[in-house]
Length: 435
Image 1 (cartoon, helix red, strand yellow):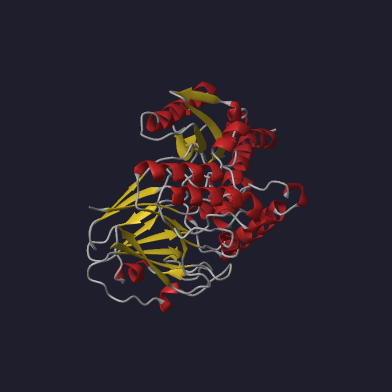
Image 2: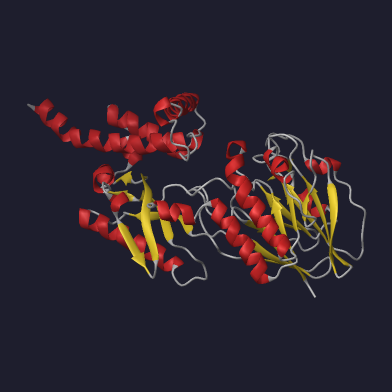
C-alpha cells in the first residue's frame, strides 16, 4: 500500500494575490484561505502526512495575522490523525519557530531548526513507512549549500523524503544554493523544495526526484500558470508518483498578440478579443477552480499601428469577459511591436531617425557595446529611483524594481514609439527643404 503525502510550499500566509478586481475575491483567494483549503483537501484525501517546505508565513510583520490560521490548520490535521512536517525558509526562519512554541501536539514536526539536518520517521500501525529529513534556515540569508553538512545513513527498506528550502543551480544565490545533480545523487527518493514559486518537477531515472511544489495560490503576475499542492505517492524507495492538484482561484497568464497584419483599430480590437477567447478556452473545462484569469498582453509584430498602440490600448483594463464562471481581465499590456519599416535600411541615414534606428538595432540584438551598456545602466538606475520614490511606498504589492532586462525592454518600447514619431515628421522636413 503506497504512502500518500500532500506537499506544498511558499504559501506566504498573510498575503493576497495582487491586482484583483474585488475585495471579496481577494479574501477568498488569500494565502490564509488557501491553507484552510489545503488542510481540508488533506483530510478528504485521507493522506498519511502533510509536508511544508518553507515560507509558509510571509514575513515577521505578519506574525499575528499568520498565527491563528496556521495553528488552526495544524490542530485540525492532528484531530484527523494526520501528522505534518515542516522546515523554515528565508521568510519565516524566525517567525515559524515563534509560532510553533505555542503548538501543543505530537503530530507536528518542525525539522532542522537552527540550520542542522534532522530526521523523523512516519509510522502506520507501528510500521515504519517513511523517513523524512529536513533542514531549516537559521538566518534570512544562507550563502552555502546545506548539502555540505548532509549525511544520511543508508536504509534499504524505508524510503526517504528530503524537505529543504533552497535555490537550485544558482550558485551565487543568498538563499541556500544547491546543485540539481547534488540533490539527485543523494540516497533520497524525493526532494520537496521551497523558495521558487513556479512548480517544477525533475524526474530522475537513476537518482532522486526533485520537486518544487510552487506557491499553491498564485500571488502575482510573476507566478503564471496552474498552481496548487501536490499529491505524492511512494511505494518503496524507487516508485514515486507526483501529481499537482489545481486549487488556485486566480490564474495569471501572459499572451503575445500578433499585430503583423493589423492596419486599423478594428483589427486591433479583433486581435485582442481573439486572444482573450483563446485564453479563456485554455482554462475553461479543465479540472481547476479558476475564478479570475488575469492576463498580461504583449503586442508584437511589425505593424503600421506601432506608434498608436498606447492610444488604442486605452481602456483595456476595463475590458472584462467571462465564460462558464471564469472572468478575465487585462492586468497589463506591453508594446513590443516594431514599425513597419526596415530598421537596417533606416539605420544608414545620418539624421536623428537613423541614429535612433541604429540604437534600436543594437538594443534588440543586445550587442556588447560600452555606450549601450552605459545607456541601459543609467536607465535602470533612474527607473529604480522612481520605483523607490516615497509616492509609491504605500503600494505593498507593487512589482519588483526594474532590473537590467526590463530596463532594456522599456528603452526598446519607448525608442520604437519615438522612431514612429520621427518618421511621421520626415516628409514635412523634406518638403520644407525643397521650398
